[in-house]
View (cartoon, helix red, strand yellow):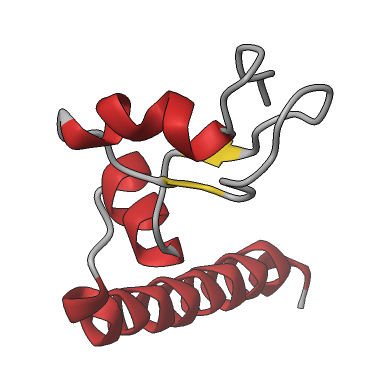
Length: 90
């Protein structure tokens, strides 16, 4: 959040910033002082995941498969270790 200069709206103040190729949006472009401008550097939620973590929506099923394989593997290893730990007691 930031305050625009006196006599300018948030949209006017940030017009050059966005014209130079900046991403994101202003939540309230018509706000003037004493209101504050709300700026978000991501235009969509997908931008957040792609830019912040390198996740792409085209890989969602691959990532889901990896998650399922990870879960099944951990359950299998847990059961194996429980079996091996209890086996000598029988």
